[in-house]
Length: 240
Image 1 (cartoon, rainbow, N blue to C red):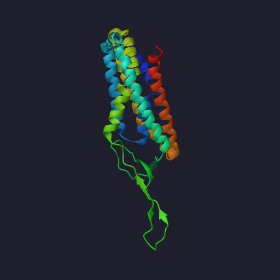
Image 2: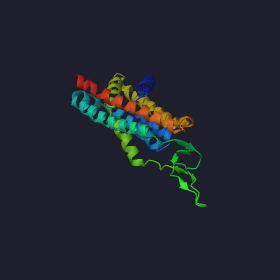
Image 3: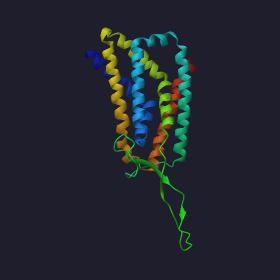
Image 4: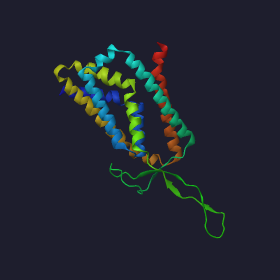
């Protein structure tokens, strides 16, 4: 059982950090959009990578270092593009969180959040008055396919995933001998617990994110994190 708790502790220490994947899961949780698919994809991907590392894939990657270089550039380009999009959202604004119970449940429980903005002003129909009114307009939920593709890219194009999950966890698991699969089970449990807490716990931040300004700050922070991560990925290659 010691190997199980060792894997759990190491898994949590590696995964609980501000990274592209965690930021995306947090944002989806706050937006209350497709949280369950995002959490499942992240946890399942981690599980597959951990199992691959314990099974020996780490030795393959260490024998072909060019794979890590390719992953670095691909991941950096993706993170840069995502960061620019987040910066664009922060600059333009137009998002806020309205919690009024008007939206249907998305299958994840009591999920009644909706992004709202203001529709164009409608002229008053009577008396020829020039007065205008505004009516709330609920923004359509993001399509599932782009969200799934984004989280897959943030997970599988991130070289740190292979360095930490496959190489490091795989190498340490090997030191546990016959109990290496218990170690892997602990690490997988850590991923499931973390992504579940991050995705479904983020909805409780909604009370602080009901204004457009809050969302602009959030997207601005996401842009800084993503672009910084992109730069950090290629610096070792450029410096080497």
